[in-house]
Figure 1 (cartoon, rainbow, N blue to C red):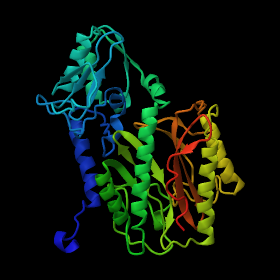
Figure 2 (figure 1 turned 120 degrees about the vertical axis):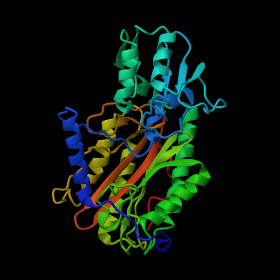
Figure 3 (figure 1 turned 30 degrees about the horizontal axis):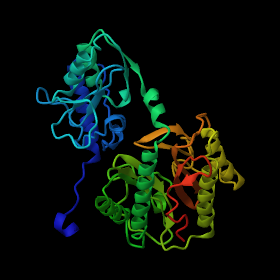
Figure 4 (figure 1 turned 30 degrees about the vertical axis):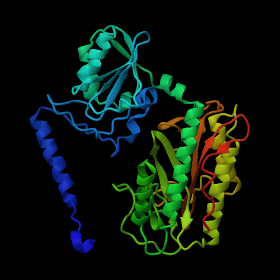
Length: 409
């Protein structure tokens, strides 16, 4: 492959400073005091959830920069849902799936922002108080355009309102989550079959992408770190894995497999040691990762608080002497510092509440689906990760990813 493509090019490091200097000069010439440059992730998979949940519409288009007067809001969509009156789904492209989408009316508007304002006006909401979801995913340009077109309307945050409705899954949604979880097990199993000396993270990810295409799954990413980098959640680049370094015997590999199947998320982690023979110290942290997650799974019962699952997970680690280790260098093993203070999160048509932190007092109810995850680090040994997707039931919690072995050694 290298012979066909030649040497892989790269931007010289000094060029980034030159670019910043050019922008500083341009901003000063424009009379600005500063520039706030914003960045979003390299995928649109994390933006679709609320409109999809309400209408079964997903826009597969990339989020393209606005090009006036041709289009604005390319790759985005919005739903106007009056308390009384028909809903209006505003899409940017005419090839929306009329065999799948469920909304009273669908408008195609190349200028999405103006189309949303038009729909609000047509719904008698020009002076209404309108709940707004996904403000943190909405561009400032979009919000300004809509507010300027409707100066008499007021907009109030409504994310918690809608997320609260998504907490407890319907029977059909539970079926979707079971299926998505089963797909994640198949993906990880195929990926682990590629873990061997001389292979790379890239080989492992390729197996996952290939099977995902055949199963109709859409990977968000395969976030991997391995060997000397096992202390990291991922390699902070695109791709988010090190496609170059060959595995050596004894390396820890822990791919985080996450994405969507027909809109419903899977999120799943296991750890493996290259060669299949962990050292005693590696085995200690591998077993600890399994034990702490299964302790949290066992606590996922109706009436429990979200923070109880965090306590169960970290209580198990504390019993094993592996919680909040002071001798871990966070620069070498960023997962171990536990800055996030989380043992997982809700999961459905996205990452959802509750968050399994020491502070979240959400009461668990039957029908909630949770992704429960944890890293475990030992100084001089490395980091392992483990995760299960769990359904809260009236009785025993159901581990929907139980089809994948916990131990690969």
